Length: 257
Image (cartoon, rainbow, N blue to C red):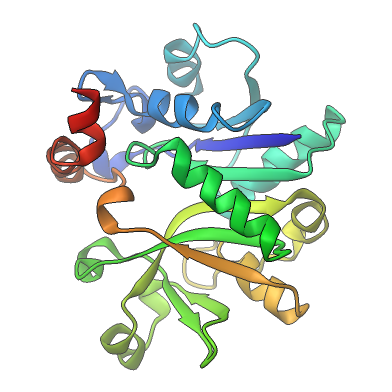
């Protein structure tokens, strides 16, 4: 069994969302989170939506989708904590998935089913405990995504948050973490509590699982996609506008049109 986890608990202050959750904002006429759910449902048997701020607004736009599982995040303490809440719900329901896919409710518009299938295929082939999408962009000084660090053999060994990255990394590393993951569920369940709290934000970041996997000498795999297949998430009103314009230029949209 494969279970999907969609993260949809954040307040979305920077997006100017004061009464509804950011993931319910319209993206080309449809709520952002519906893109996430319809994508991930093509390869999963069950889906957990992590809600928190303005949770009823998320439930309202997803009310026509049957069989969803909701996990409530009382305190917004980062992506690692959001996934911890989802894992707790999966264990509580005794679902016992083999794999878990994790994506952001405001950043799954650009992926296609074939991308997810490729991630899963490589994950299995490499006997990985953790696989994730990466991309390359010259826009990271604005996007602030985590830098993917590889050794001289191309193996992923770390992921450094933008704000924590020294100047040498920012100048030389072009590959960044796109924020969509495939986990072996048992690895995730046993290690999600080991994510350290950020001394800067006080939050728990899911990308720390990459370092945890490497510390245990377990394979973590980065699967690179073109930037046009990843797009940008939505943290501000400006990014919402920009993301829609970028989406309209993609081959995916042109095929749908």
